[in-house]
Picture 1 (spheres, rainbow, N blue to C red):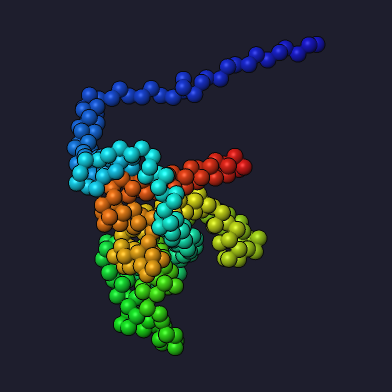
Picture 2 (picture 1 turned 90 degrees about the vertical axis):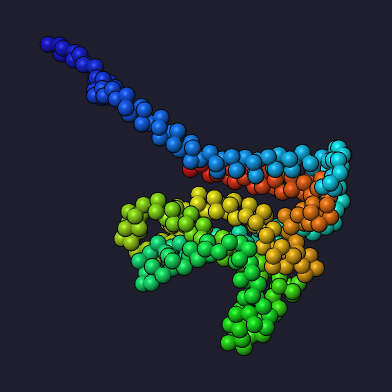
Length: 320
């Protein structure tokens, strides 16, 4: 007796089972168009200001890098002279070294401190509500106001920093006029100013860490420190890379206003970053073309950082 082969009944496709979507009422399309128009009207002033005050000056700066201009006369095209001049300018190399030290001294401590504070804020520790208020404090004041406040804090005679050190018998230096301590003083201030956004980014990253891995690790006997190092930190790696890129960009370009207000590049040029040097060349020496070339060099540095970050991200995705 031979078995009768079973005929397979084709399964209905998911699209066939899906109920048809109801036809959209004409008033719905009209409301969407009204919402889009309203949103465009609200965004337009900001976009116009961004185009006028950011895009156009940026393009103008790139063009002026190939001209010689004293801000009043007629710009003279000089080709690549301003670009080649950078490589034989010792002040540019010193400013580039200061900028690199700002990035090295500032990025890693910002990541570590920001991550630790985010973990504290994200926990249920007593007094965490006060922490959540305090980490927004640096965002209240503008960079200029914060710089003036820190100038007073760093005052060698009446500053709170030296008064605090005196409680432990430490004779604090005159921070901003000491060639050894001026640079760390500025980096500490910049780290303090960068922490709010870093903590917010890490809080967003911590919210994405699945809770079940902590429950499973607790059953295996893992302690809090082990969970922090082996589970929390690897799971916020993408946030760490984002923070590193943002802070590197911030310490390259954002060091201008802080150094200008607090030290004006001194003492002995130890805090004169590339951004501050390009500003002085452009507006104090009225060499707009060379100052624009220095700004163009900063733009190239920022692009290199972003490209390296994207390569690291791609390699990590391929490995995983």
